[in-house]
Every structure is written in C-alpha cells, then in structure tokens.
Amino acid sequence: MKMTYMEAGRQAVIEAMRADPMVWCLGEDLGRGGVFGQYKGLSEEFGPERISDTPISEACIMGAAFGAALVGTRPIVEMRFSDFALCAVDELVNQIAKARFMFGGQSRAPMVIREPVGMWRSCAAQHSQSLESWYTHIPGLVVVCPSSPQDNFDLLRAAIACDDPVVYMEHKNYWALEGEVDLDAEPVELGTAKRLRQGGDITMVSWSGTVHQVTEAADELKSEGICADVIDLRCLWPWDKSMVLESVSRTGRLLVAHEAVSVGGFGAEIVATVAERAGDNLKAPPVRLGAPRSLIAYAPNLEDQLRVTAAMIADAARRATGRAAC
View 1: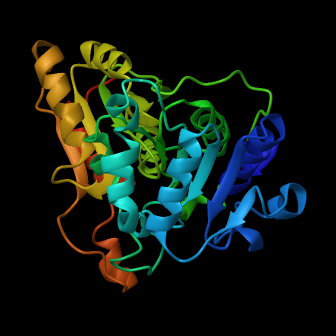
View 2: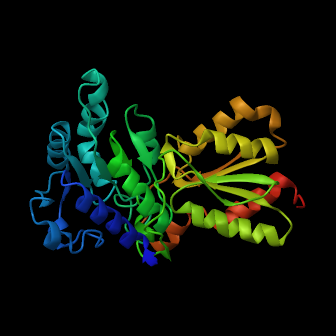
C-alpha cells in the first residue's frame, strides 16, 4: 500500500508495540502526536504509560530510557531533532553505548534513539545538521539512515528488535515522501545495503536524503550512456562493505555523496576503505561530495549553496568516467 515516510515509521512502531508490551515510547510532545505526527493516535491506543510525555530535558529522557532498557524494556526515545540530542550525548556515548561491554555482557541496552536529521527549509544552523558520522565513531552504537517509506518501515522494525542501542536518523525533509510499502515484507538485517540502480561504469554510494539526488543523477547519466551502480547504504554502522567493494571491483570508479559536512564525514571512511581494500581496481581517483564546512543559514538562497544536488553529482560522475559508454 502507499504510505508516507512518516506513516511507515509510525506503522512500524504500532506493530512493535502491539507485539511486545515491553516496547514503549518517551519524549516531548508525544501525547499530541509528536512534532511531525509520527506518534499520532498512539496515546489513544496504548495509553500514557507506554506513550510517555516527558519534561523538556533531553538528558533526563535519555537517562530514564537507559535505566528502563537495563531492566528489560525496549524504549523508543524521541529526540525531535538530532541537534537537540546533543544535550544527551553523555548519556548516549559514555553510558548507553558502553553498557554491555562494561557489565561484561550481563546487561544490555536495547533501545532506539530517533534523531531526525538534515536540512528542513529555513530551520537554520541549530536545527538542520546531519551528524550521523559522529555516532559511527562510537563503539557500541548501531547507526541507521533510511531514505524511503519502505526502508523506514523495515529498518525501524529491525532497530526495535535489535539488542544493541540504535541511533535511528530519519530525514526531516522527507516525512511527506510517498511510496509503496509492503507491510508483510521479510525482516531486514541491519547492515545490509540496497542496490537501487545497476550499472558498470561507476559506483555511486549514498544514504538518507541524498539518495534521491543520486538516483536522479543516475537516471540523467543513463540517458547519456553512463550506467551507474547506485547503492543506498541504509546503515552506516555496520555498513555493507562487501556490496560496495564488489561494485567498485566491477566499475573501477567510486563517487560518494552525502548531505553532511564533507570534512570528517562518513564518505571519507568509504573512500578510505575502498582505497585500502580495492585500490588496485580503481581506474580514477574516488570522488567525495558533501557540504562545505559552513554553518547552515536561514535564508533559502544561502541554504541552497550548501546542498549537494543531482546536477553536482552528475557532473562529478561525468568527469570521473570521461563520459564512458554502457
């Protein structure tokens, strides 16, 4: 059936809560449906004990969820914006991520931390960041970045079932994106990428919102005789190295595109891995596209200067391939 990105995530939560009474949600404004409507109607079905409105304190929310996870529940923590989650980064990075290790495997923290990311028109510097690479650096955390309604359903279900803490980063600009969603789809394993286009001229890797710009660029390039292998990573940790390396071994070229700042972005990790493990297969230097190291402005014309566009991606692919034919 056709669903929006937001509705697909909401359905995943509903199904998980119906199946397991230990699954519950906490965060600010959940009783009224959440900031984006992703919890609409859940309070009426599950009651305030399982759809818990909290004080305006991210550290309190994260700490309470951690304690609840340690004693056997599976909390879904709503941070509203990834930027706000920084107020609770100590609880997440120094406590939650390390719990299983520091307790010698006797305890674990099965919880999902939903942190909407990315640029949302005119939300400015404090509400528009893409900070996914921060969390990939922290041992103990799983990092997920869905790009489509189907993936938001499948991956959120998998995240809720995961026994490790999952930082789950939905893109704010795609809540209204519609697509077909199979509610009976087979469970997805976290850490598996998805091939969206098949081609032999260049491997193009992305995740989250930028996937849509990459597929648009790939479709334009195909009309010119350049066939791209497009991979949506979906999970940044663990990430599907085998699919990327296999693709690069065939195409000999790599382009990575993401919305986050290029400096220290996860694209650098992908490029480095390919250079180390498949460098002999490269026919051209890898290409990495990301935002400049600049604060995100409120003004739309300035905000647009920081976007990685389909046109930028297509131009970079043309240069990398020398307009290679299919």
